[in-house]
Image (cartoon, rainbow, N blue to C red; front, side, top):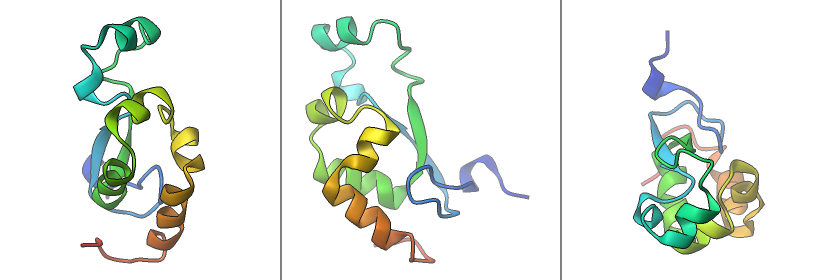
Length: 98
């Protein structure tokens, strides 16, 4: 039986240890226009469960403010060309990527 932290990544669909990715980065939660724009959302609970590899690549490729304003849901993340290219590649990896 899989534990909660060893389920399938919502982006690459690999069975890995998962982390919670805030779709609106915590660093932006106190910015007034972010609070106003996303007032109907509990920002601390708004996110997806993804593997460390995908999580690291998201933060490597996309700045926090751009994540909050342009890539703030799973579908938008998957539409990011460089991230999609990485996800396509990482799907074929059986172990954690360094």
